[in-house]
Image 1 (cartoon, rainbow, N blue to C red):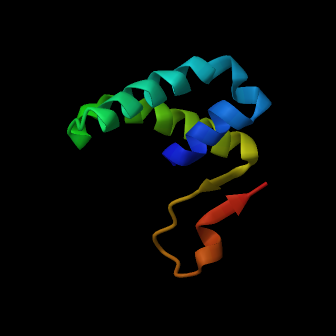
Image 2: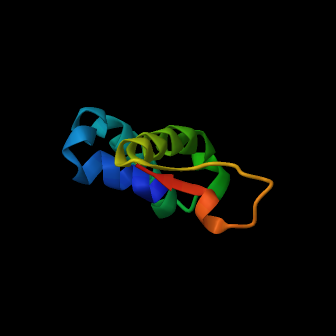
Image 3: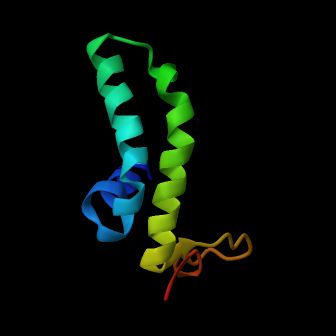
Length: 80
């Protein structure tokens, strides 16, 4: 989902307005990788990326719906 968010923020015209959010994740991520920081240091950045990925998924028209009483996989994914 966070890869979808980065795609939305950097590659799609609708995400251009929110591109600074992507940079606020990418720059510290690169600095932590170079500085060999712990993986959990970036944990506060993931909720904003998950939200951006969810926005792109909702605009795309597909979402996963919870359907506990069926075993048919088509009942879980609904696209319009």
